Image 1 (cartoon, one colour):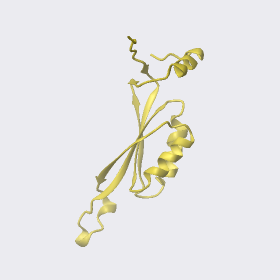
Image 2 (cartoon, helix red, strand yellow):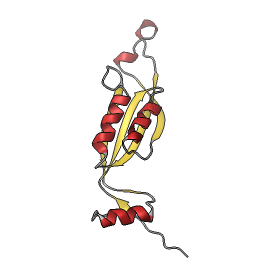
Image 3 (spheres, rainbow, N blue to C red):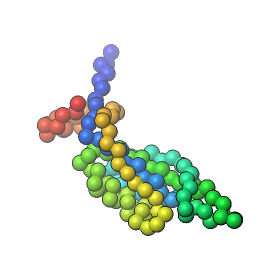
Image 4 (cartoon, one colour):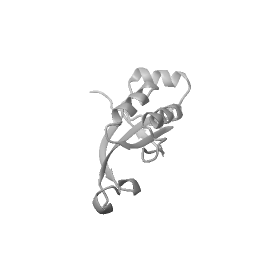
Length: 125
């Protein structure tokens, strides 16, 4: 019978990026270029001053793509910057990106990776 273990990760952040529809693939590809391991995408709708373009100034629902990436704090700045520019968030109405510091996270971490981290003297709890 195998022994199950829980590996707690600290120094982890969650990047959330809301972009215009059909931009998520570009944003994820840019994040992966600098080390992001994966992403979760879901759809949302929002409203704001830029969405008041319908007949008679009625609000028009606009679908957005919401990208969530978990990454180590050592990778945070480079991934954040790549996502910002790939999502064209530097233009009005382009979207928003923000970071949430996580207290802890847990997922499967291969033994080889844990061994490498522990050899460098970084705690995994």
